[in-house]
Every structure is written in structure tokens, then in C-alpha cells.
Image 1 (tube, helix red, strand yellow):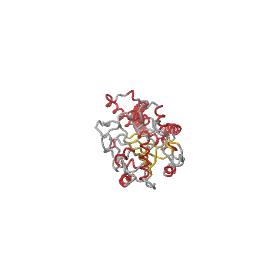
Image 2 (cartoon, rainbow, N blue to C red; image 1 turned 30 degrees about the horizontal axis):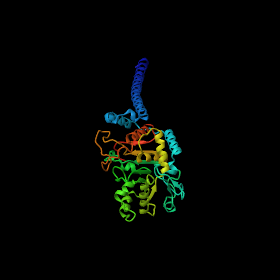
Image 3 (cartoon, one colour; image 1 turned 90 degrees about the vertical axis):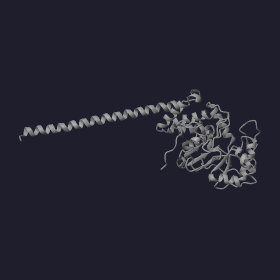
Image 4 (cartoon, helix red, strand yellow; image 1 turned 120 degrees about the vertical axis):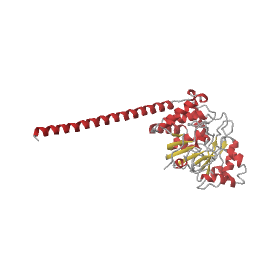
Length: 363
């Protein structure tokens, strides 16, 4: 075999290798381009959806006729990867702390309240309350967060979408868990961990009117919440004051596993003015919305569960009003749909995370 023939074979072999390399590079670039185009399209779609919800208002939606379309858009928003926005979180935190200061004023303590201090009621129709020494002695010394941010917080509403949600373990993994109105707890759907839970004085009047003389039933009822703080709107009205103080005395003395605390009426009034100034029109903020704002000020990451003020979920299935019953709220007091739209805005802006679908199994 002469050298000319060998050189020709080598050139041919080299050419085939180079051709294969070119083909491989072409297909690699072609497929990558397709993937990137798909990703770019998805990112663009999600950016558009987030921008839509970041400016959504109740005036733009008629829930009685547009509910199907609204649910589809919410589902589309939730299908997009959540994007946390640290800058907006901090701006929101600073804004809430400047106006209202849950960090140092959420409820009455010995540090923020003096003996003989005048405590205003939430409504100006009632005369002020003067703090006496006996009640002052029963106030907590200070807040458990001590001016430091909490980590991940779960705010657990009572919405029917939590029924069969499988969110219990995910909720219990949070550093701090907030619940409402002595709602039942379970390890499957809503979890067991509780750090702060509200009690409505009407619940005491309905079921535990003689709690101060017979504290056993009430103590047994609240013992399921472990070391939670039980927070009451003591200064919404004089009746609430009497009921709240009676409840505090029934569960006194405080111990590491339980304490009753009273909302600061000053905090609630300033928070109400803050949101009225931002266009909310309800007569009174819902307790859930109030404490989501508390979490936004205190916590680095806020996860919100069970807030869905409609009777049909995202899969167009009928859901009860609560995960434990189907009793609706008082008509004309709160503007739940409008508050929910504000939560959607905050989710789309990366300030908090809304959970509106069943949770995946938590590893």
C-alpha cells in the first residue's frame, strides 16, 4: 500500500470525525436553543402573571361572574416557581414597624405598659381603661422574640381548603406557628405546633362562662396548644375586657406552658388606619389579616395556609367555610375577598408565600 493511498485514507477518516463533531455540535446547539426558548417563554409567562397579580384590585374582578377565570389565573400563578424578593420584604417590614410596631407593641407587657396607664379602646365610643396594679402584675414580662427576627413562620387560617390538605408536617416544620379562635389541631392537615393562638371572648361566653370558678374544662381545652400564648382582644369593648380578665384569672398563674396575653388596642388601631390608608374598605380587619401583618414584621419568611374566602377551590370543588365546620362569618364586618387580593399581591411580589393547594408529602 503506497503512501498516497494511506494519506488519502487518513484524510477521509479525519473528515468523517470532523463531520460527526459538527453534526453533534449542531444538534447540541439546536436542542439547547429549544430548551432555552422554552424556559424563556415560561419565565416571560410567569413574569407577566406575577405583574398582573401585583396590581390586582377588587374593582377589576366580579367574583360572582368571573370566579372560574379568577381561579384559573390563580392556579397559573401558583404553577410558577415562587420568587422571594428580599428588598420588598425588608421595605414591607420597615413600613409596618414604622407605622404600627408589632415588635414592641403587639400585646401588653410589663415593659410597654405602666401601672395607671390609660389604655384606649379600639372604638372611641367607649371610655378609656386605666391599668391597675393587680392586672399589671399578671402581664407577661416581655415578648419572646426580644427584638430579633423570627425565622420561618406559618400563619394557619381556618379555611376549608385545609381539609385533606396533608399540610400538617409542613406547618409543624416552621419556627413559629400562629393560629386562630381555638381552632382544632391535627397532625395530618393543619399540624400540632402552636406558638400564638387567638381566643375570641364570645367563645368563652358561649362555652366557658364560669371558667373563673370552674377552670378545669377551659384548661383542658387549651392544653392541646402546649406552650402557646393565648391572645385576646381585651380592649375591643368593656364586655371583652371583663371576659378577657376573667379568662386570664381562670388560667392564672402563668407557667412556661401557657400564658394569656391581651392585644394592644393602640397596635390594632394604627394597623387599621394603615390599611384604610391603603384602600381597604372593610369595617374591621379580620384577625387573620392582622396577624399576617404581624408575621410580616417579625419573620424572615412567612408562609400562609388556609386563607381562601370562597366556597369553591382551585379544582372547582365545593369546600366548607372552615376545615372543621361550615359556619360562615358575620356579614358586613370584614372584607375577606379584598384582603385575600392583598395577600395575592404580596405573594406575586415575593413578600410572602400563599399555600392554596394540598401539600406534597414532607420528607
